[in-house]
Amino acid sequence: MTDESAPLRSPLRSPLHDRHVALGAKFADFGGWTMPLEYATGVVKEHTAVREAVGIFDVSHLGKALVSGPGAAAYVNATLSNDLGRIEPGKAQYTLCCDDATGGIIDDLIAYYQDDERILLVPNAANTAEVVRRLREQAPDGVEISDHHESYAVLAVQGTRSDETLAAVGLPVGHDYMTFVEAEHAGTGVVVCRTGYTGERGYELIVHNDGALALWDALVAAGEEHGLLPCGLGARDTLRTEMGYPLHGQDLRPDVTPNQGRVGWACGWKKEAFWGREVLLAERERGSDVLLRGLLATGRGIPRPGMSVTLTADVPLCDVTSGTFSPTLKKGIGLALMPRIVEDGAEVGVDIRGRREIFTVVKPPFVEPSVRES
Image (cartoon, rainbow, N blue to C red; front, side, top):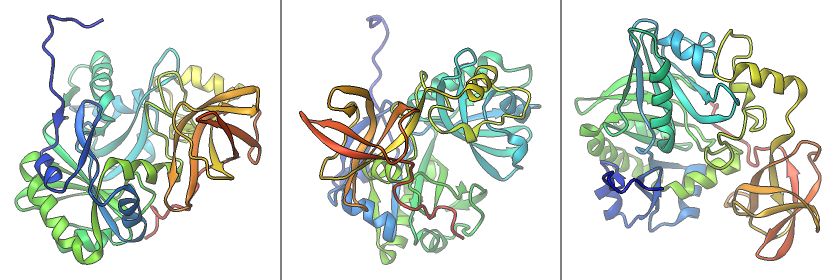
């Protein structure tokens, strides 16, 4: 039910919106933000540019929240799933915000460990307010959670020529995977982190809105000789699906646990506390009923979210959670939360517009990642 007395808020726009319009972008809503889905070049060419050269994405819709104050790192470590004790300042970590009662995944996010009193969190756009709310609700005295969602842009430069592109605009490159460096471009601070959502070597750059246009323009110009293409979130989706990286809202949800979603590796099982720890430990001990699996087409079928997966023509298993055409493999691929008893190598059917197409159950990734290569 809608509260008619509440003001309706227009979709948010990236500070780079006008650049996307000039490039002929097609737009779509992502977590309340109007963001580029693809440019005139099309998803396949953008995808291929990342795999073979370099692409630049505007992912400014991602959240930015700072947990600060004495005990900030200890508080994050006692609530979010992964163990900050495994890393040190200057490193980033994939982690989960789980519901304490059910263990379901409220969001998956990246934590930037700046120091013991500053942890920068980058949640998904649609979940930022809820993650901030939960953290504020239990924050101890002296720990503040501030929401900077609309104040900073995030650019992702991904691909085999990403180092050359960043170096050409004076940004630091070559640091280890999941580490970040605080740098400067045209007088504006930039956090340069060696991470990404494509499976290729690359970087994510967090910059205040005031410096976003200058940084985007400089990177696009510098990357031209390296084959850089601006890439939309359509290509980001095909790239991440080839890696088997789950997407919150589809593969990961509040009714899906880390054990089910195959992200239990992002839980610090040995630490004393995190939201959902007890229920998740119990599930881990007995084994989850379902597991996120990969689907690889044996024919020409392309799976889409919501399509029915069957063991035989009349025995339903589950629905596809993510599905797309793989530009690298030239065939359909997908993900599904499947009963654990179905083994890798099994053949299942996917109902594609009334026709049962055969897929093989596999363990992702579908394409070998290069993200960790030095």
